[in-house]
Amino acid sequence: MDLSLFQFDYRLTWAAFFMNADRVIYGRYGTRADHKSQRGAPESAQNVSLDGMKKALEAALDLHKNYPANKEMLAGNIGPAPKYKAPEEFPSLAKKFKATIEPNGRGCIHCHTVNSAQAKFNPKDDRWLFPYPMPETIGLALDRKERAKIKSVLANSQAEKDGFRAGDELLTLRGQPLLSIADVQWVLHNAKDSGILDAVVLRDGAKVDLRLQLQAGWRKLK
Amino acid sequence: MYRRFAITLAGLVAISAALGQDNPLQKALKDVDVQGEWIYNDLPKGYAEAKKTGKPMLVVFR
Image (cartoon, rainbow over all chains, first blue to last red; front, side, top):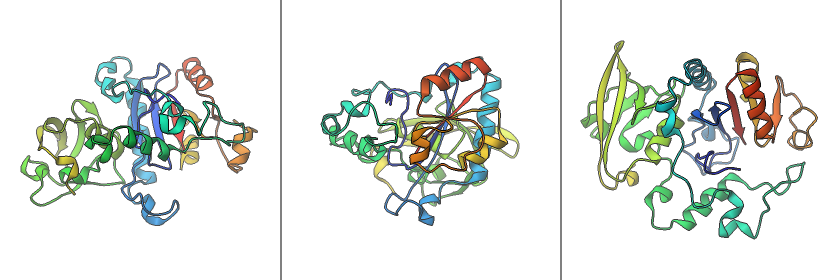
């Protein structure tokens, strides 16, 4: 698996990419705040829905219709080149796995082990200690049945201070189109430890520009 | 989940990295009721199919 292309929350048990044949990524789908419950437990699916997936797919098809005119705004969907470009290159995984799997799936590297390997390789990096932050981290609770629509804004949160409102539909963050909650997580994951994220929301039928201030240590907030 | 959308949004080339018909991996995963056309565990084939058809791709990791 090409880790320079397929970057996502490796703790997930199910994740999807919407892509062009030339490897440009339109968006992602798959979010799980609860990583403690067993797969199949109701709470393990509390952040995804068929409605949300359908809307993300429709949005991906719209991006595809306008491609490649929109190619530039999709550039942020691919992250910085990782040190290890394949799971089996991580020192902690190299001895356990091969680059290929058997036809029946034996020898498959589980995605969560990639996450653990990254955390082990970056032991002091908040980005890997707190990977793929949920939008609640900045004060936004998103509706799982929508693409990236704000269900509620947490009181006294940074998002509230910066003018985000319940009912706003997040269209872009850092200039990147958002198809899903996973896309919001992707932008947050790659954001700096402090600084400003430009956002465009749809509010009462009109586009509104907002700026989200990320304070030092924001990834650790709950 | 992915199966349903492979049917309802047929404009997508669907690929599963952990997941073609009669593929040993498909059998191992007990994907016996897959609908629509899925390419299992062969991204280059998916890229080629998407390029040939002009369709976008849905790549699933599971």
